[in-house]
Image (tube, rainbow, N blue to C red):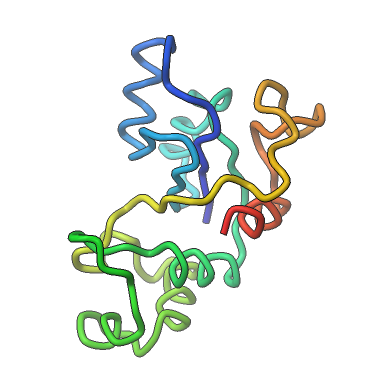
Length: 153
């Protein structure tokens, strides 16, 4: 499972890149989405690679994001009580395991917003013009994306 975080703004970008960001539900800086690993999603990520950071997320990070940043339509937070009443899972922890394992997707949770609004990273970005491999913040992180998510919790 991939996590994609938008790090650069959408001013003066090509229309096809802006359309792809909208298809990914990324229309503001520091917004994040979870995506399945398939060729369709990978193609969209590669198209917007100069504006986002992405990588392979772990179970603990999925649970942390759902618990701290999960939001329902109307502004209410995602809670264990809501998960128990509206899904087949007993808690956010079991829900995050199912999401990570590919047994369900974010769309299967009723009334949840598909995008997670994150805090800017503590101690700042390393720079949003260079890739992660060059010492910046953009591009593919691999498993190191979990550290960035921890900073942006």
